[in-house]
View 1 (spheres, rainbow, N blue to C red):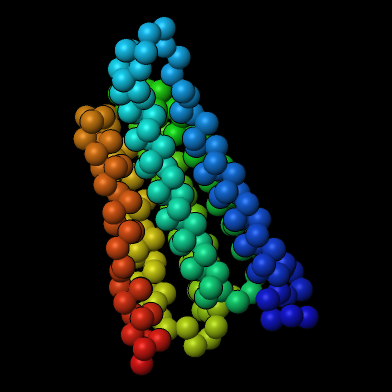
View 2: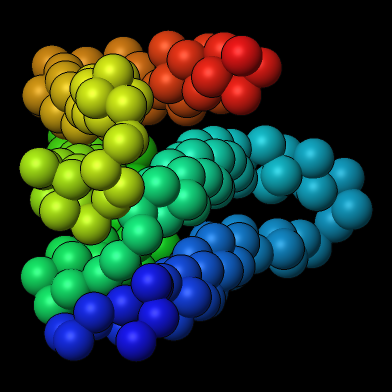
Length: 210
């Protein structure tokens, strides 16, 4: 039996390949919500393109967040050595929430001023983040599926970093019932939290250079 699997699991490569495919499909479907406007007069084209801004903003936020979560999932499997049945089902739940993103994005782009649409979108991202946290927590608890020498500080730093997203998106969902404009600004700025290196990255860099 290889080091990548146990009696109840699949090789890591199978899980990663399926997840990569799900991400690729979900990220591709996002663009299908943006249609080329049909205009009677060429002079109307600029106005019709400007009218697409809710869909373009929703697309940009979702594409970036899916990219961020793909990177997070990839980084987890860099440190996870084995799989088991529970991890496989957690990963399936994770993929299910990823597949829902094109729908919640389309809903947000069509009803950007409606609090319910903002809440559905935000809660979709909350669910993704919480399941990714559960995925990491399950795999690293007592080093269940990770190396026994994995630095506990990396586990803690990664856990905190994952949870930032669900907190921010839950806040955006609640704020949307007061001001959808403010909620959209929060959603637009949220990816910036993950685009810059955090404690995990700096700690990992120090370990490699040391």
